Image (cartoon, rainbow, N blue to C red; front, side):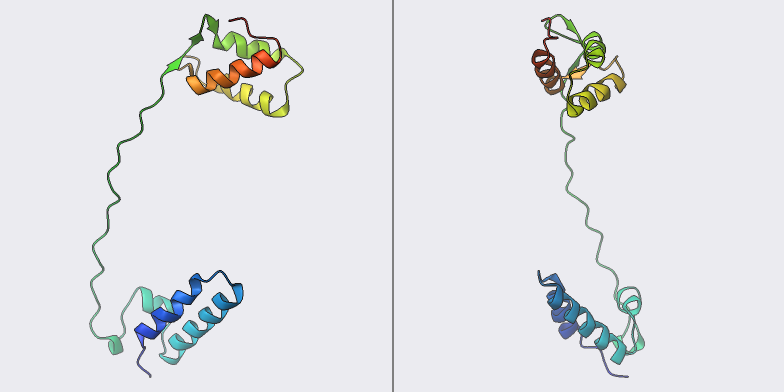
Length: 138
């Protein structure tokens, strides 16, 4: 059994990051051939250690992702400039002239819990759709 040259294997594995499909394929074959000559599998390499490699290494400590604060949720309102959101959504759904995207957007607003209301961004898009179809009453 030949000893596995881990440095050379790592260099070959780096070639697998290439943008070229052919270069990645050749690198994978070369790495697999190296493992085969050492009578190892990819599982042996990654999960276990063979006697030729010496004692198993302890895994590096797990890296914790940086702690991030969740973004502030935008405020939601049920009414905007005196216009009731649910009534406007119902009116727009009865209107036949909506594009498929507009219809899908308005349907998703209808499916939201009415107690939560809409975000400012949702109101702006809803207002634009209503204005485009002559349904804005604000």
